[in-house]
Length: 203
Image (cartoon, rainbow, N blue to C red):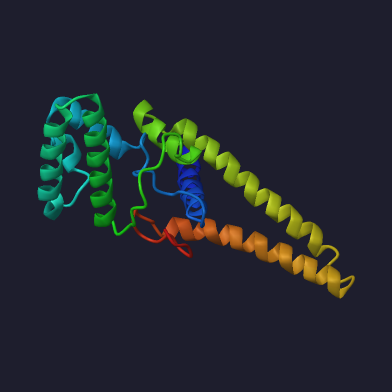
């Protein structure tokens, strides 16, 4: 039973991520000031050691990041304002190179707090070392979504034969219901990676 719940929760999470990929919503959060890439960049700059950020870039891009890091470290020593400028320069360079390596565009650093709640919760689950609370919450929301659309389709179906208008209302409810379920099934069989297009949407 627990395995089934976790499988469904994983499906629901994928569906949530697909929803976040709709135009106008942010799927990736590596370009935010409180995202994981910039967090590691802050650690690297504070330690004066570039290693913590190298995992975010391809092997072929290491040289550019090492060079940008060296420049940032040198400029940081010139004073508070210089440090702020150097840090921003390095953050932008690192994020740009990281996203380019994943085939994603870079449109500038986003402010802290721009991370979508489901993504923030996913990060928090990793920090806590347990995904169960997140999985349960997502499973509940996804199940509620299926039930709501099913109820609408079922209610409309009972009156579908009364008139053409009623029939069309049923078809609309039916299509909405089936597409929602289809989205869940598609998420199960199609694993969307960061930097790749989710089914039916642009990153």
